[in-house]
Length: 398
Length: 227
Image 1 (spheres, each protein chain N blue to C red):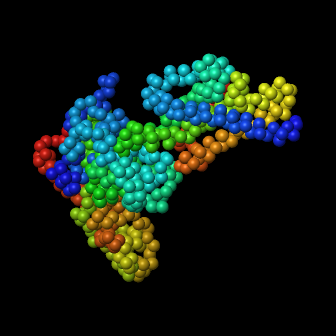
Image 2: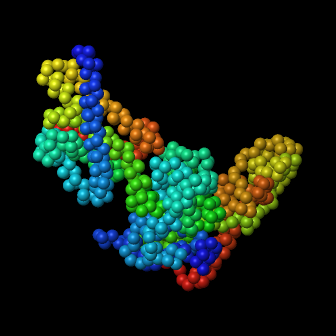
Image 3: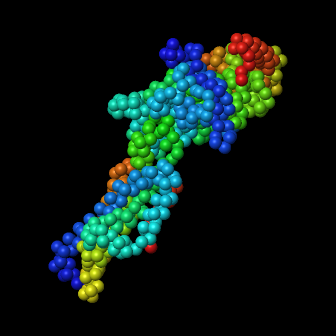
């Protein structure tokens, strides 16, 4: 049973907080009677303002901080049974400042825990090079020292080091907060990709709600002084914030952001007006549409042209000779979300989103009306499934 | 300057240089061995450091000759007296550097080591002391150089060193001898210092070339000046 949760990642909670409180000698509570369950194989994000106890909660899992009362179960066992050093070797740990050992090469940094566990150094180093590739770094960096790497590279090494002994649990404390936004986005993408492959049980602390929504399977939003405001899937926090605090924290544009969780596949498309290069200006203007989408011989979109532009041209001009007035964005009908479709519509001069297939060939266009219908349908389905989930789970989340 | 004096007294000069080197290097090394545990304890338990610092500063304020004289009843006019006195002085520069070096280990590094599953002793030996090494060696350099120069004072209680050349030169009004002694003391100090720089480079290949900011920059390295 224990190993089922470890290996399968199906059902079961790998980490359970039971009435965990951390109170400092001056009486301030960092964490107040926290109950939280982290399902095996999922990414749980603890998010909240500074001083909300999210980092303290994280550090109590690997006993860098000891709770005042309550207990934390890891795979069914109280973490406070046994030797803390042994506990920690089974839990990957990544921090914002990387905490790489400056006096050790990259490969030796990554090999830290396997070597502590008694693995021969040569084997641990060979494994370290594999891990470098896994986190998207060149194995040729293995012999460098940390100061010779960029911040983003150091952070990747930090992740590789945490993964080296293949622990089932990964604790990440603001892992991407110290790097610039572009590097941060790529590190987040990398984590998501890694997680689809590795299915670790991850607890990640961040103050950035965008990051929480992007990488989290479940988001636990804290109030100041270690009280949970809401726990749930990211789309739940966006769609049904429990109160004004949650609504404020997730931000004013939560409605738009929530569309990221709805696929565009059920969006109805209009098959026109679009014309290939062989069609003439007269054919394109016959329908009286204010904008016409022109496609190339490969079926891909060439761009939008307005009726006004076409009206100034002789009727027998082939469209292939007409320059486009504007392009806008496309979205991929099978894989993109409604947010991408809405974005494409807003950016298009015609106010319509161009739907393409996986090869970029035009499938049709979606109007604002069609987008509205699809959004309302997705919203209704989502609300219904959430209500079912709550009924099944026996009440709203804490 | 009487150049011919040098080759004709070569054997004596070489002997005095060796004795001076011994009296300078040995106290600094013993000082290092004593300073490491003291510094480690002071870095770990903060309350321990102020009294230690007070004691070594008071010792440092004692004129070296007075300390020699105080030790003579117990150890006589011997090398031991000089070595004990100079060891005591070397603590004053090495202990603060051990503490500063250990305190300069970045907190995230220490925390990461703990979270990786290092016990306190293993973390100290394999992470903290190696990272503190550049600062500790900086203290050792000051300790060795000052011991070498103070060792010549041992001559005042009859312990042989390059100090002989100063006293003999002064008594005989023979400046050549004084100049030779001065140049040799400085040369000896520079050579020992250079050796320690090379040792530090060998021990810390991980340090950025000239740029040591990441490890030590925020810690002022205490530089001792004899009162």
